Length: 408
Image: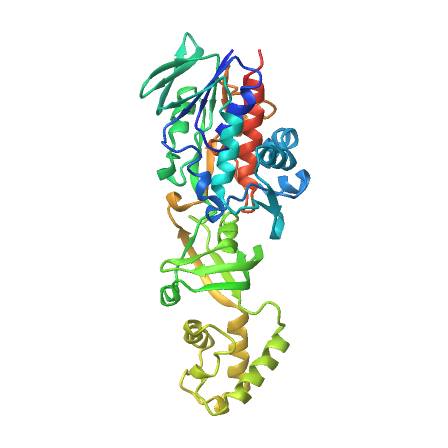
């Protein structure tokens, strides 16, 4: 039994190592010089391996086709990947929101552990680009690559989506899937920065805000997302952890008008914030408004808030009316933005879209179109929110594919 695995990323490394336990031979095809190239940059180079949430709660963190992942997530759990990595010498820790990282904070250590698991004695690593499947008389025979043809009994496609193409995820897997007759759900960016209609974000470009609350509303003014955490202003709009998470909920951004509000002081009610503003204005009552809000806000953001509140920046603090103060408080609690579009898919953390899940057996990851062909990881039309859920999906589907592909 020979199993061919295409792609040595999160899904591919687990698939190869798992298949190697049963198969006579595993051929792992990777186009990059570096194994786990995308893994090395995840979690800002720290690698958010998984999330400590129990499996049922974790399934709710996948907005696209969560039911497809039931078998995979229950077969190979977050505890299983943690145990595997720790057995390879890398200790882990749990941080805010259940995010699991290596104690060393080095993604390279996680990649080293996965390589140790994957590259067993019966695994042959080949540096090549998979160009097409070898299909003879309706049967899968192997893979045609840039360095020659490789024959095997089973093939697992773990090529990733279209995000971060410099790491090798440029849609090659979709071509292989189409060759086997699969439908590809149009790839879209997810967990991606957002371009806003407002241009003032460029004036505060690079400003990072912690402990803010961000809320998104659809065109019917229904709240569709709200979270508390950290964000970043950019030359095109907004980014940062809570913004990336929010983007996964803006499913129809091409057609829908999404309104975003930022609460700069979520820990304070309107009444308490008003009292705070009153104290500051008493403290700086001899100054102009533009110079009286340094205790409340980063300096670069002050003129923006004053403009939103429609109060003259040069007005003396002692002359601010109660109505103007009310508008300032409202501006601090409801900074308005309109989402215009996502940044390009190349800047997305994950791809939403891919091989249609109804054409894959969720219990084995085998194709329903071509016997012996399996899929795992981001190439499938499944995506999750931030917090380690996307990597867990890759590990779990990789394990299920590797285990089943190696069976006689």
